[in-house]
Image (cartoon, rainbow over all chains, first blue to last red; front, side, top):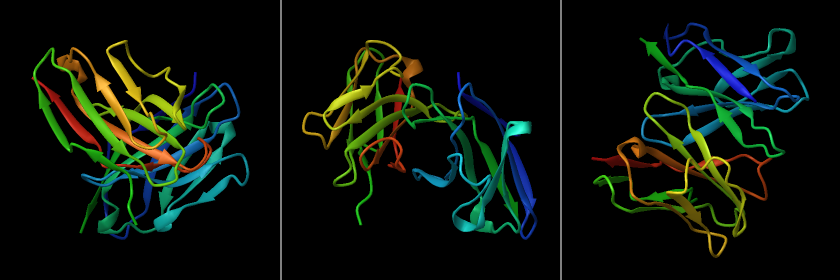
Length: 114
Length: 114
């Protein structure tokens, strides 16, 4: 079965510092991977997705993620954190069964200090 | 433009009662999804509609849960004989023509079963 593990339920950074949110996946088929962001009291929003094209995927709001098959990882990064990046971030992998419905990890809460 | 809307935003009910949660997808989106998000967890897939029919209902936890989309637009998630363990945020998402396309999420309905 497809699954993801997000390392760290909370990550705290200073404004302007590098953001690194970790995600490792398990998939019995070539994976499709996603990162979503959830702001308080809002729905989830897709940041970026990997669909077997380029291994470095650029998303919205300056985020990017690199697919590393050898490490089964899909970590999310941003060079310089803004206060507005504070949110919950979810890594997800495509479910089995032919659809592209995501199976989500437990989420990582990003805290940005001034 | 109008996004995905969900009503009610909050629902409090008593154990054993019946509840209905409504989702209005983005106009023209043929695919609609329901997820359940428990506290501290990522969203968990429940059911996926393509048009009026359920293309994948493998995520429904038991036969107390049922969802309909009779005209291929609005969908209703129905929960019978609610249990305290059903307390969660129920998320709806929609996408254009199939699960490969980006899902747009609503803000969710917070269900509390007392």
